Length: 231
Image (tube, rainbow, N blue to C red):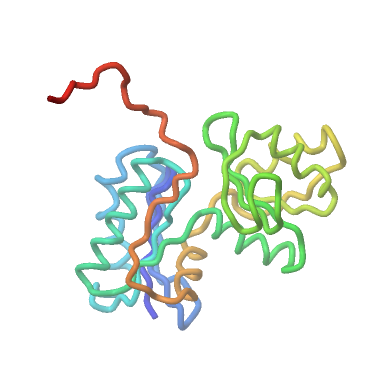
């Protein structure tokens, strides 16, 4: 099974071609661009397809990172993945960055460990996913929370908690101020394209289209007081 994986959810714009049967990445390219994902993504996809020696007709699935992350970036990646799926008549599988990081963390910490993934939002909040119930969400359900609130909510797990993600150190420090410490995984702070592709390979294909994962409500609000009176 050949899978094209796409990730435009953050500052990076990347794609890879993954051979699920062989369990290896055939080609991968990731570029830190900040903005401009729509302008770069197709060139990057063409590059990895050529390096992998795989024609579009040879793809069996498309995997896309659904976020959380940049509002515009996520939409670019998801829309592109849907386009490939529609044009090629193949399934498109959405995988969140939180799920991908959690998958790698389980390999480090073990299936029985209490684990959590936390990502910075650019504010005093974090996106989070835990393998156990927390005061904010059930196990396996992603959520957004203030860093200090989250630290207080999971401080009782200190000493038995394994963390990953680019806010893992921040959360561990906040927990350490109240009760013990958490273990920081040595894995990458962001999800790998290979992991996204591997998860997509193991999921059951459906006709449902992937949707962006937005955990925080939009900042923009409808203006009040300007409604036009209807007759």
